[in-house]
Structure formats: structure tokens, C-alpha cells
Image 1: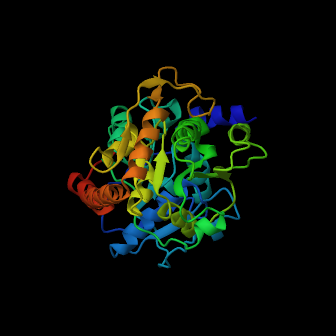
Image 2: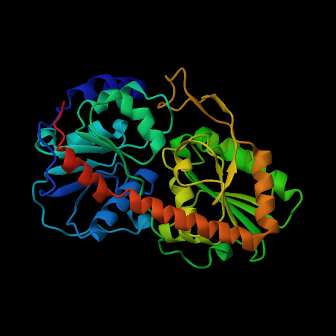
Image 3: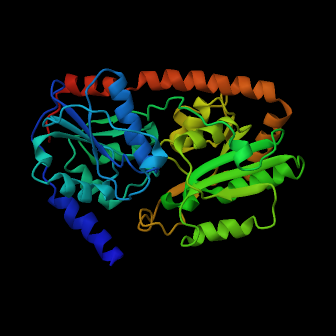
Length: 394
């Protein structure tokens, strides 16, 4: 049934959505549609969008179309209260597979009554048919990175504009080490990922291998990986947990944590290690940078927009064919992604361990660069670009 629904959604429902004939009007109200009550990265990106636009003085309406209940207490976010008026522009902070259900929920007849912008984060150079079909009805597309823009731009005549997630330094809870019984003097390495977003793409197996190589020489190290997902149902998570059984220095946490607790974990870490195979942006990497935590990151895909050898520890990676059963990747025959070296990552951890002051200075450089990069690519500047072109739908 799920396979049939995915096929119908990709090739039938996506083709039924009408395209708006309207041009962008910066003077009309703006609404952001997203998974505001969900702890997933796509929800956080929508919350960041509303926060940034509200901080700029705009009265932003938000429409929550979350598909999972019970997570609102974890995200520590409340929508701003503005008068509900018909929006002239909508930003759909949802990737194409999420759109048909959300559009139907908002009312398909309302869709062409606004200028519609899709905010999409795609992680590979090859783009699925469903995404290409959804491009047909978007008046503009915002993307979080140059990597995603290069993938999407060839398939649409609509404006494709880079707007990275407007990451800020969020409140961080105290006592996270104590909560997980991690010694204060332990060298703490952390990694945060969602198992539902393709566990192979997030590549926690390589993080574990890199840490094992590093900790063989420095046994006072500790790796804490926070993941969202049901370990009782997810075979990938179960296999990951089995791979660290018997290790007292590696912990995989599936507990529900609040946003401030996750920020506290990142802030209290001595290094953040992301050996992703591909990222549309790399939100947790940017969050670690904003918390001044030294970052070891794969040198490929979305993160390279704000990670370089001057501010982070980059792991060189040959490209290999994508091998993944995730529905988003299943039909992509020519797709490739990175295969980062755990050995090089372990060497970077060793450098951070041996020279902590230099590492913190490098992390401060990363934060300075990220702040400058974000300031150069804001939502307001994207809207100005749309207003200048007054793009008409093709």
C-alpha cells in the first residue's frame, strides 16, 4: 500500500496541483507552512524561517501541518500571534513528498491564490522524478546551499535562490554531561542525526569507527550519539546499537530531548563529528559551529558553503554509488555520495584533543565566518531579488 501511494503521489497527485498565476508582491502578507510541532530537521528549518522573518519586523503567519503529534513540548517554540489575513505569498517549508497532503489540508483551491515558494533541501546531485514534478507548480524555490541549487536549477525556469537556514545561538541546558553520567574531564564527541532521514546517508557507522580508532589511544574519550527514531522498529538502529554493545565509552541515545538539552549537549562537547555522506545544508553542523564547538565534517555537499580548512577539520571523501533502500533514493541509478575516511577523522580528533586552545580558536573562526555567510544570504535579500525580477510564472 505504501509503495502504491508513493507512486500515485509522485506521478499523479503532484501533477494535479494547480500553479498560481500571481506575481510576487512584497507588500502582501506572508505565510510559512511547515511541520512546526515536530522535532525533525524540516520542522526546525520552518521555525528558523519564522523566527528570522519575525526578528526582521515582519508580521508572519504560520500554518502547522505536522503529521506527528506529541512532539510540541520538545521543540520549545510557540507561533507568533498575528491577524489571520489571506496571504499573498506562502513559503512551503516542506520537501515535495510532504506537499500534496499539506496542500490538500490547506485547501487545494487556495493554493493558486498566493505566490508559492518551495523551500527544499535535497542532498544528492541526481533529483528524483517526484521533485521534478513538483517544480511545475512552484513560482520560486528557495534552497539552503549551492549544492542543492546546482541540482535543482536545471529542471525549472522558476527562480532558485540560496537561503541557508538562519541558525542562531539558542539557549543550552546545563548539566547534560551529568544527565548522561559523562565525566566532566572526559573528551566528549557528539553526533546528532535522524534515523528516518536515511541512516546510511547520516553515516553513524563511520562516526563510531573513527571514534574507536581515536579512543584506542585516548581511553578517556566518550562518544554520545543522539538519534530520533524507534529503535524497537528500526532495523538500522538496532544494528547500530548491536555494533557498540559492550562499549562503556559509546552511547546511542534515543530519549526525547528538548531543543535546549540538545543544544547543551553540543555546547558541552569537545568535538562534533559529522561524517555524513551528503547534506542539503548540514543543520546540526551549523548549530555546533554556532555553539563554538570544534567541528569535524565531510568535505562534500551542502556543508562546504560554510566549512573550510580555516575553520573546521575537513575529511576528504571519494564519491561512491549510493546504496540505500530509502524510498527517496531507491530509483536513482546514477547517484553518488561521499565515503569519508574514519582514519582521517580520528586524526582530526587527535589534533583537537592535543591542542584544545587552538581548536577553540578555530571554532571561533568558524562561527565568525558562519555569521557573515548567513548575513549575506537572508530571506529579506531573497525577497528583494524576487521583487526586482517580478518573476512571472512560465
